[in-house]
Length: 80
Image 1 (cartoon, rainbow, N blue to C red):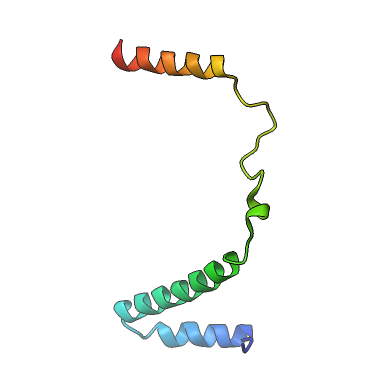
Image 2: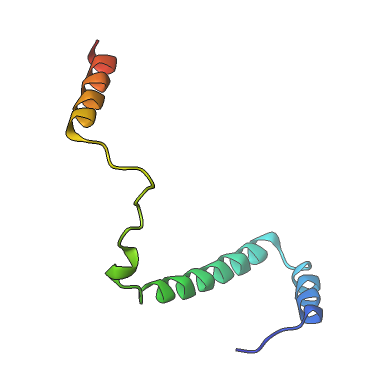
């Protein structure tokens, strides 16, 4: 891929400033789509091992009694 210099960036901005709003929106949409396509293809190479422990916290998980208490409290709030 060809790297563009900051001067090219300014040139592009000057060029598109003369375009209609719809044409500029289409350009933005196309650029965003090209970025998301690259990001999704790089994420497809991840393995399940990389996701293990992703949601772990620093504290211990709640025990069954605590969860039962939370459920009971929620039912009291909801049903009275």
